[in-house]
Image (cartoon, rainbow, N blue to C red; front, side, top):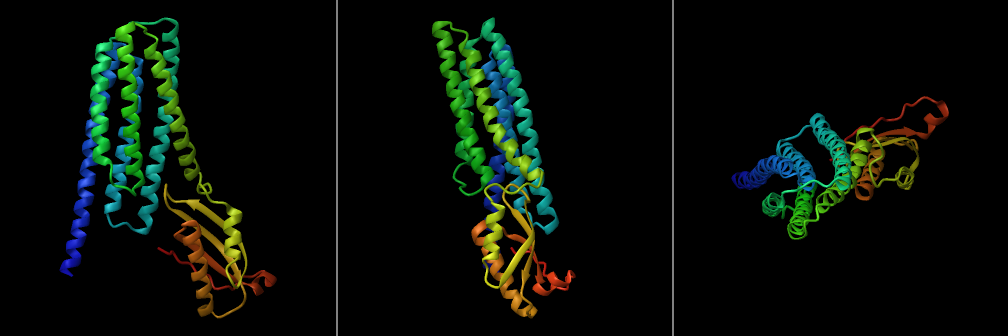
Amino acid sequence: MGHHHHGHHGHSHHHGATGKILIASLAVTLLFVATEAVAGWWAGSLALLSDAGHNFTDAFGLLLAATAYSFESRPGDAVKTFGYQRTGVLAAFVNALMLVVISVFLIWESVQRLRAPEPVNSQVMLIVAAIGLVVNLGIAWGVGGHGKDLNLRAAYLHQIGDAASCVGIIVGALVIRSTGWLAVDPILSIVMSVFIIWTAWDIFKDSLNILLEGLPKGLNLAEVMSEIRGVSRVVDVHDLHIWSLGSEASALSCHVVIEDMPTSESELILADVNRVLVERFHIHHATIQFEHTRCAAADVCVGAGMVRDVH
């Protein structure tokens, strides 16, 4: 018992460390976003402003990762898991929407700039982008190496993407310093904004699909039906619904028609259907109701309604 407890304690300690890294990264990122926004406005650099917008959404991503982490480390119950997972999805949706608005504004500004170039303080651009590079690589190093967690992987990739845009700004600042070609700044801003809209669009689509109870990404309804029908002694399937609980988990409910048989035998069919769902489609939350063939004829269902949630 003591040994088991010790193992669990080690696990929560690891959780705590990752949570602390995420929260520290969040604080540093927000501080840097504020610095970058002020510096961009002061230096007249749209590239810095776009990067501040980009970094701001990263802060958002880190916040989501930290929240998901703290929820995961709590003992969850059936009611809350639904709510918490959806909260993250809703937040991602709002974030993506906001990003697109910021980016469209920046592109519009950049086009105006290309028509009438304005002076840019390349010195400030250079210094701030260099700080950004260090910040992003530092966070990537801190968050990286946690493998499986989707939120953390997204946070890691974001930081790498940001480091790349900082390198772009550094190169741009050097070009402006040596050639005085001011168009570099709005051009960088447009490229970055287009990239942001492109990434935001995916998040937007995926999160909207989950919020509208759409079919989870990568699943085909007909395929799921035929696999369930393929289970031995299943006569038919109808009223099949599949929806997303959150970004990871999917749920399914359906009516399965089987031959008339004792409940104890139908248990085996239930186990087979659930195994297919878990192994083939990674659906762990299934509510399956059995109907016997005779009830199709009588139009009245006396079938054993067997509801269960498999974890």
